[in-house]
Image 1: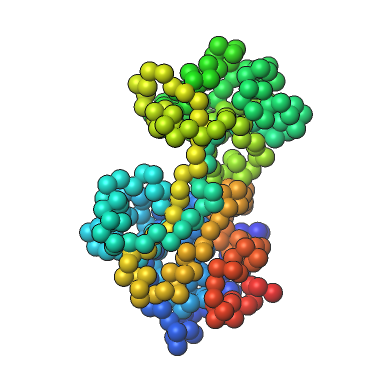
Image 2 (image 1 turned 120 degrees about the vertical axis):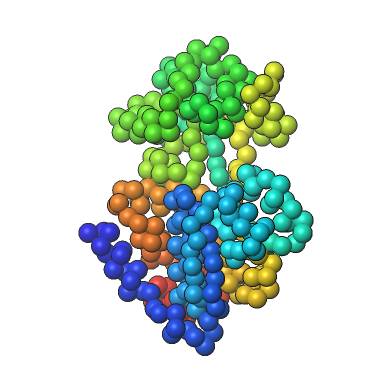
Length: 323
């Protein structure tokens, strides 16, 4: 029923872009990356551009490397959303150096997050568990086990080094290396539903962090040199460091920036709190919804969050959503 309601609402709110022909921005291409959070960002952005700015928007299925390659070779798509800039490589650096693209700002705030997590109910019952020192002093309170990344994942290398740096095994912990992302997520869900201890690595935005109230354990200060060294499996003497937030940005071509400044200004303001996006992902799964349905759910329930993104003309066109 909820899915039907939001599908119907999306169709009802959408006005043919020809109705805005007097100030139509023209054709726009935007990435639809092949993961859910980026697809929701694109669905929200597409709706606002079409219904608020009169654009004719085409969502182009893509991924990080193909999107950056296409920018370099074809100067398109016009807009790349949810680009994880720490995984873009030398081609992206050259695009920046040559002035062919503009970074508009963070689409996720504070960005992609990683950490070692505990259920919040556990930390509320035992406040000393909020820090890694407290966790290591009380392994029995967190189940005596650390739930680690699967082998082959980048986070596995960093975690293995951190586990050595903190000497979790010396503190009495068993390290459980999951065989897949599914078993890692399932272990969290199973423990949470039974209000049992769970301690391990996770990242966001993700559905589990939207479904379950989890607390990131304080691992101490972020040490850039230590964190970089911890990405190398052969680091001989790893040191502790908190995980930094990964920058997740929106990029436009220089040509698009110059020809569509109003739309570029809109896209510079499209920012989701990472926690909000995790909750959207959880809503999408719980309701078996599409990305478009998740987008209209966000738009209809959070006008205070996005009304500041759009200009006055777009606010007038979208006034039905702002009542």
